[in-house]
Image (cartoon, rainbow, N blue to C red; front, side, top):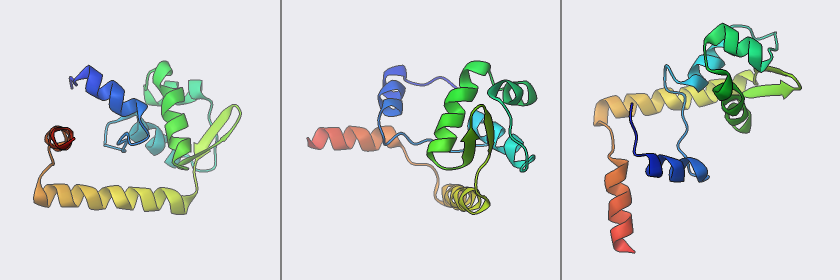
Length: 119
């Protein structure tokens, strides 16, 4: 899906970047793979080969998952994180998806433009 590149770059560089586990995303794909093998650790190369996520994206995605405590890391291996933490995060996402289905999506660009107009 095409994005406004400058908006994306600015938002992804900020701490407020909305990074979620949408189905089909690299994060979702990697987390699902690791969750299917909870007792094992994998190298980024093994994760790439098993999931098809590009090698260049695996490391960055794993780091973001680790920042949210959804995976564990002991060089060079990565494994699924604490069950409670992963379960809570996935539960929150499920709730957000339900609200979105009922209420529709928000136009964040419209919110941003309105906030900038007030400055």
